[in-house]
Length: 212
Image 1 (cartoon, rainbow, N blue to C red):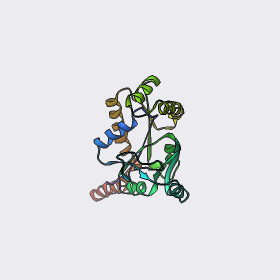
Image 2 (tube, one colour):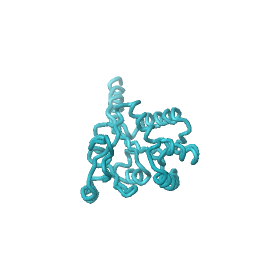
Image 3 (cartoon, rainbow, N blue to C red):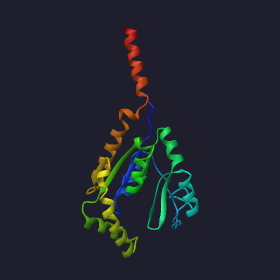
């Protein structure tokens, strides 16, 4: 039976592990496709347009928002980030799952959109604030100033945990991944995500009638 696709919203403060978990989920099930966001920030070394992000000018991005072509968007550290609507709608109709690695603002916009009924939202918490800071420092990718900014932002991010369908504490990466798999498997099996069930049950009833 063909099912409708699922929008998997994965959010957390920076450093809590959502990007690693997102990669693991896609390795577990190649039917889960990562949503490629649009952004106004310039490409980093090795990044390609359409692979990591759709790189757009500020004017182009704002035009997409005005025209209703963005499912969600937000301004983060001076740059816009957002999700183009068309590829997400196409994936849903084809029964493909789309994974979003986005912040609470983006998650809220998707849940409040016309596609909100197709979404399952999951928030990932760090085991402690000290561990969160240690993970950010351990990346060795950002300056002390950037890390301080991310830590300040994390408090606001965490304050939105109760808006999500599921909340996981990532104190063990393998256990958290296993919990995510369980959530997604169960959500795929929800009755309202399987439009073919009506016809299937009608077929069963027809068999009963034929035996009468």
